[in-house]
Amino acid sequence: MKRYLECCCGIVVVGLSLFMAGAAKPSAGDALRVERLLSGIARQAHQPEDQERRSEVSQQELNAYIAHRLARENQPAVDSIRVDLLDNGRVNSVVHVDPRQLQLDILLGDVLRFEIAGIMDSRSGAARLHLIALKLNGQPVKPQVLDFVIATAAYYHGWDWEGIEGWYALPAGVKRMIVQKGKVVLVH
Image (cartoon, rainbow, N blue to C red; front, side):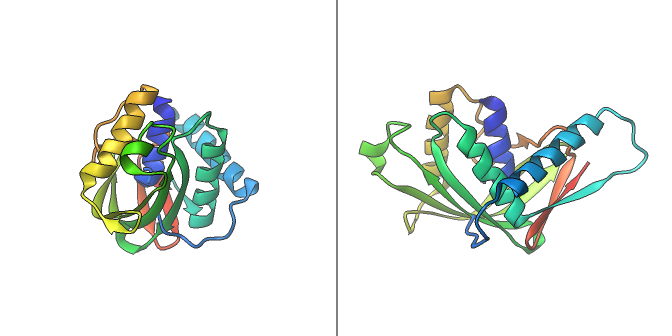
């Protein structure tokens, strides 16, 4: 579960998790391409390299991979994550959380739809998202609301959580990410 949280945060933090895209319907082929790419990067991580390599993942492939990862989870707290990759490291996202899985429905309602805008930062195999704007069900909220929901999920599932703007490990072998319009460049 810790690896799942790191990956989701990396993706959204790419990845935290974590955006308002109108991309095409996710396909299994796109998800498998990203999975194979990450596996290949992880295998090469221990080989000495003279120079850095770069691999690109499109916004559509990233969203398909996120959907694929969420579908494999047993009782996930996150229903869906959609990512929009913009220029200059900016990302927008829509994250749907199932409050019943976290026993937060009485406190926060039946629908938790977070709209997140931020700037992705990465270095030395880790990434984080600097929040610019955050809305819950269309209303602006403070970052502590999202932090509370994720901290509750982390506690419930036994995950490590360093806070909404904490640094989270990127997939094995990935040194850093560069977010550009419609794609993310993985430096390995």
